[in-house]
Image (tube, rainbow, N blue to C red; front, side):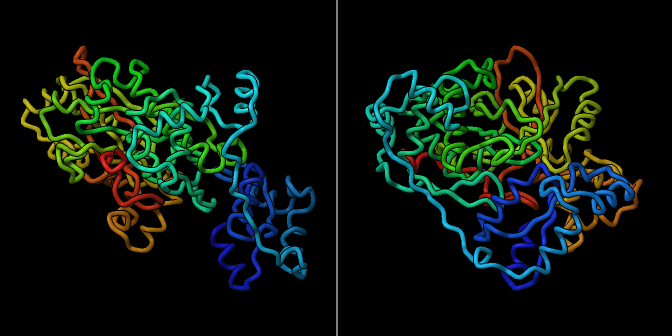
Length: 448
């Protein structure tokens, strides 16, 4: 769609082809690019895994959206003269009323649900008094711009300020002292309400002194709903993303085929004091005394195991090779596991290096992946390493599917069992196809 838009702007007649389930998204994308009447045609979903005979039947058949022969739509779109309506640009209304009319609590709650402003769990109504109290969590003014957000590439960005984040933090049940963390997460530009069909969620890790200052849980149940700060910070971030990017409407601005329950809240704090290694934010170039958040774009899969037991290498290799090739693992391990690896002589970099070296698949298996084909293969064709070498490999040749820079390790947990999880978690801004910051880690302290 983006390429078609560029051709149209250059005066080259173009007709983008989309599958029917993406019709609303195709029209919204054209509108976001300033071409609300861009002509489009549609074929049935799916196209992946269909034979050439089946795909030809799509072309020779009926457009399932426009209800006319597919080729008629193509020919008409390419040959019919542009009308005055076609030549009009697009305008966008970004203003929304700052205050709602007074009403009963029940009616207001229903209004929030009807407008898609919630995650469909009960919310705290964001009254002026509550929002004002929330804003005491930062020394900055409420009209300071935090950043811009959009659900996916080719959608228009929406700009938002501190007060809008505070409103969503109130809704989530957060406390004012949590607001700087929510602001830092929101400022990352990584949406927790991605529209990816792969049903990604944003996973965030908090490091530094603020963990203890606001009472975040790094021990037993650190990844579960057992702590107010962990739960409400993640929820506030998710609600903010939903409401400052123009919504998260299934079939329109949200296209995740399965969805993801981690989209409710996925915020954890590292157990730095119990780890034998430097914490994540220090790995990323920050000082131990800095308070930071790191955002990972993933949550698509989870592998798990115990160790390091006698067969830990086989277990790790099985988990690594079962991981999605486009979404490298964020390895979350209990302090018992981290210290046991340290006792075996591993530093964090050497363990990550071992994982990268031993995560191998036949080239055929590596390239038989939707994300790898669509987002990595173009870079491989252009000669970008290490992807170019992977593309040159014979089908049965074993190739490394991750680099050491892809894999991250975080230590947390209550030391009741030596368990670990490998969670799909591409660092925002790393690798082909990303559309975010250059680093996954941002300072919380600037939002205090």
